[in-house]
Length: 157
Image (cartoon, rainbow, N blue to C red; front, side, top):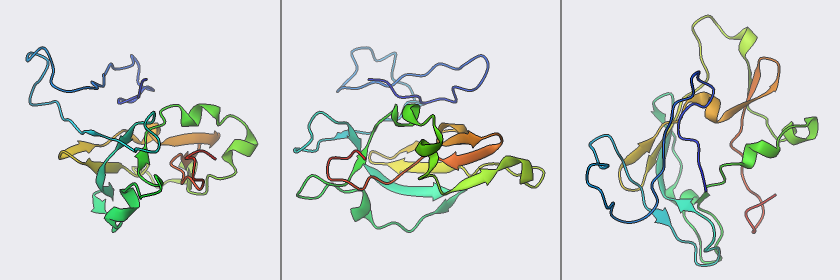
């Protein structure tokens, strides 16, 4: 299991890590800079990792999303499933057909940048990945939001 927490496009690439489990054995590892969020268990899909999201902001503006959107219902549907390699399969024109929120970087006003997302997680942690972690280049200088809804009960399309 792995998940990219830092901007892997930087040179040299930064390092980061994700700790899974209860209390740490080494208190030296824990610092004021570390934040934690518990994994959420879905009784109907116990082999998947879910996280609890409290809110989402775009460029500092909190989106009005009802908390039930992030909840797992009685049928085991919903929640925020972590699939760190989901974008790896997107490498053909057909793969990009569902990406509707795109930005042509060559047409941006000077000084403009891709929107910044911030996820406030259960446990009062904040996850604010760099935009290039959730935008993918579908054509030269065309970046599309790589966050997609899942429309099936299995969690996969």
